[in-house]
Image (cartoon, rainbow over all chains, first blue to last red; front, side, top):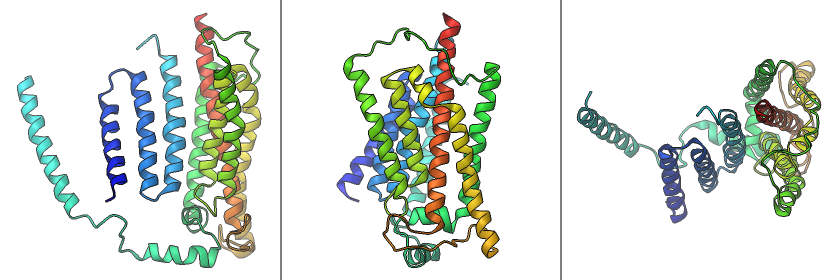
Length: 78
Length: 251
């Protein structure tokens, strides 16, 4: 396992834990987006650029947008 | 259960689960090794028999094309479902919203306005590049389509809701989405009409490495790009429209 792989694995583990331990949903959303970016890096490092591109589009655009809209709509009720 | 009891229960099960996982991990084959025949077979025929360099694209749109057709219609049905539910909430779907003179609470400086607006064209071009060379380089219809959706979201970030809803015209992109889904199915049915096999690659494969090559793989790739790009655009438009509605209700 190369040094780059180890760094990216640790990054994914750290950010994954950070997603779980985020208290406020809005903070969690941004931590999740960073987690998605880290996963993109991981897939890229593991020679799966197609999967990395899909993860980049879904994990850092589609899902955050969806959650952001839900948070905006329910802002007063949470 | 007391806190102490729960802690003991958690520690015991955590240790047990960790031990089982570690035991399982020690027996795993090394990364990247796979003893099945499928991998070698696919790697052999992708370039030799399909004239395509990017193996995932060949698998998605030809070798396992029928599965992808199912996935395409899952996406199509999901978008249709979201549109149906959200327009039911609204009562009727509004395609041409009245202009809002100023969006409350949003002040855009020059950089905030021009940076996303400038990125729009760049990202849209990148999306089309990703999709157009799906059979040669990483990427393809799905990835390109999703990136295209984010290009239009940049219009919202840079200029505002009204400009975005005018660009991401739901009535227009709805039809493009249906067209993309139809084209995928039509390629499959035409192949069946000609050869008797659904989704068989009937078109001339072209030269390996050429911009247009791979036969039906190229056509399906473009069809998927049109469907996913339009689908993401419609979804973004509908979701952002929901936030706007909330603001109006509150005012």
